[in-house]
Image (cartoon, rainbow, N blue to C red):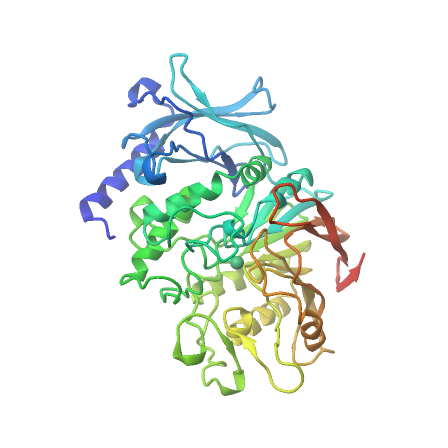
Length: 533
Ligand SMILES: [Fe+2]
């Protein structure tokens, strides 16, 4: 899986060529005639700042066995960014190369845009009256750093297992008109299918770059998902299934065929993630030459929504320690009695890795002087969830429960810097959990440091609701839980208040599911207490 050194040099050269190519005349590039529409995966925008945003597409004509039938050459793609949906007032335009080495994906980063402004964008290939034009996407820049926006509507979502259902949730999310989507992991699943599958994925276990590309292509062929990407910019982080269930850092999980070289599998999966997400080129710490070779992909970061809110987006997979005390001496996750686990409280065990942890402490320190809301976009349930009623504990070691001291360090950082209005957003557990972040979870009367909204899945199943009430009673820092319903969350943020609506679909096994609000909550600024609204 390691490309030869010459290949890496080739990729670096291509990266340089691609960066400098934007304004060369079209005739300078090879331009194969495309008989069919190559814009089959839609468009997307993401990683917005106050003056720029990433525009994304990937050219794909599906050939034999789900692979691409496009010629193995760079293809010039033109792009337009306009103030209006009819593209009569063009703000910027240019050209980019869709490189076969990147699956013919395109990432454009127009800069110098107006803040807090909606734009429309599209891509074109071909020429001589033989153009293919992509769908039109709508995007939006963030408020300027010193702006005081009156409101912000963020959607948060995670876990969209294809075979578990239809993506109706995305269709309804579009109608809710969020300013941005925060996607918190499990964009794809690596499995070959599921029992009682609602729809059957093509392909088997995803193990190679080609497998991951095909899996993303399958998901991104979904019209509802395409509509959600075209509606607004997305922030994205990954969890485990973008690579393999329960992997931790460079340690594999134990689902599916054993792979001799897990780091190479992870590198392939990370490359496919980059190819399919509206990420900035700056996430590639060693540029394109680092793709496929195991270089760090730095997807964590800090986002300012003017003076209204800051979001700290976290990567809880790439750098984490292996799971502690998984039963049977296995790798992967399990439910553990922490009293019987020697390294449960080992301070060296980390969820974010030492470097990201230092970065987060610094980011929270910067927030100390800033006010507003502080959102932590991370992948999983934050507060403890003890599965064992009464005395003793049984904890799931894949979530923050399995990284107890790392969680304590994060809480301590929130307190030390007196971070204003911390709100933890999460996913992963396929259930809605709403609660308070406590200074000391062992003491229910301890200081409330912040609030937590861990969202349900778009489609992925939960293990059922038979014990939800019992678990809520056992873990009183949570005020609400629901394991029955799939959907997403909408957070409406103003300087004074945050309102969160848990939006749920009627049935993921049918294409035309309806939407409703399962519960609404309010949090007043300066007062970390969840109220039922
Ligand atoms: Fe998931």
